[in-house]
Length: 101
Image (cartoon, rainbow, N blue to C red; front, side, top):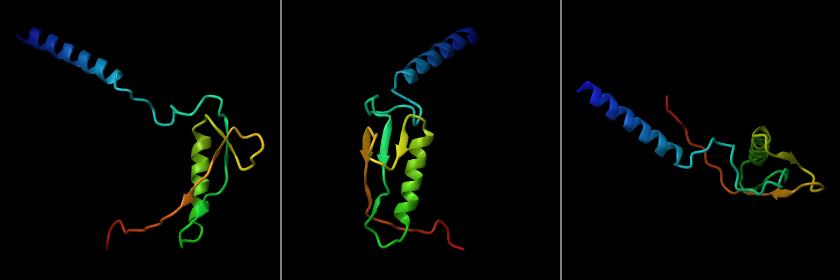
């Protein structure tokens, strides 16, 4: 009986591995829907449409850092030599406490 159970468990595990491989999983930051010819992205500071001063600079800095550290793109502020341009605006800012003391 334990031999049949081991075979059944092995078949189930194998089926699960095959299904997991076909689910479309990819590592974060390793796939892109952009064309491969886009290598250099122009990214200037986001526009700030909130009353919070400086939020656009901090968010812009983090977005540029994240694009650069993923390794596929080079990020620059100048339009010359860029393959694509990323623009945006911060339109809202809310701050909520995580815990109360």
